[in-house]
Image 1: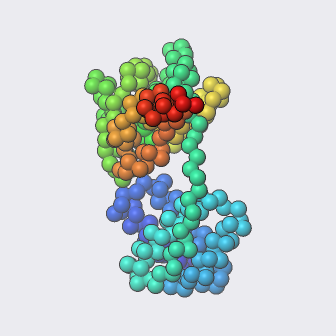
Image 2 (image 1 turned 90 degrees about the vertical axis):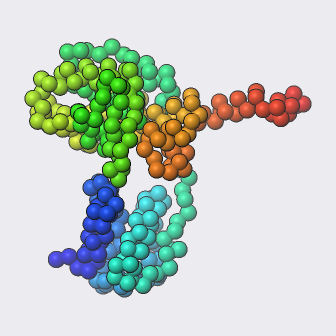
Image 3 (image 1 turned 90 degrees about the horizontal axis):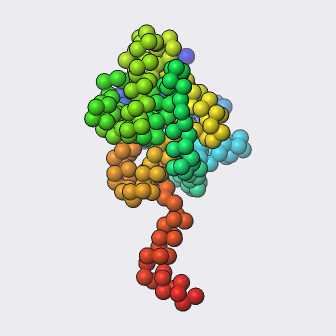
Length: 302
């Protein structure tokens, strides 16, 4: 039977799902981040969040470090915990402990190694066996990821009526049920047309764009598995987040328009885009050396 600890967590998760309209995957992640602290309180013989104190929080974080939990994971858990405790303060009058103890130093954010444009182009332009519907479907998924920068969840939920191949547009429903319209490249349009011709032979039982041989929609794990197989055949890393990152990075490097990339990615804050994407800084340094008058003078003087 759920005790007071579980009950409060469940109430918070219902609020996240109902008012903030977070996806089930995100809500599940919040549960995973909050449950260990509830278990820590139980290990101390406590069954109420009212018993939470600064000392208990300190011992909890100490135990997490001893267990080898990575700093990035602890940062995510700390963020979830701050939101949860503030919710408990408003809902049940919880006396908040010192929340500074759950503010961790930011770990340096590592950007994934993105294949260069030529490497991705060479792979995507390889001839496909037109009699292999699996290959056509998987190729269309990769083209769509790279062409339009979709998240994995967005591609998974994509329905047929969201595609406008005539206009070259895709209507995407992203985080928080926010909608945006993203252009489709000509290569992605061609790949989708080839796949949709084959799709009708698979007895579709769902209106999702990407389905299995049984006619059912492909889930997150199935798409990840298909891309892993493509990655192995290619001999280079290939997964949804990397393709989304490559989309943003290559577009930003060629256009320099951070605001446009923000809109295409569906980021509410431009700071998220600035972290998510990266520029070729060696190229920028070279441009600076050749273009900036002060840089030129310094180089000539040396």
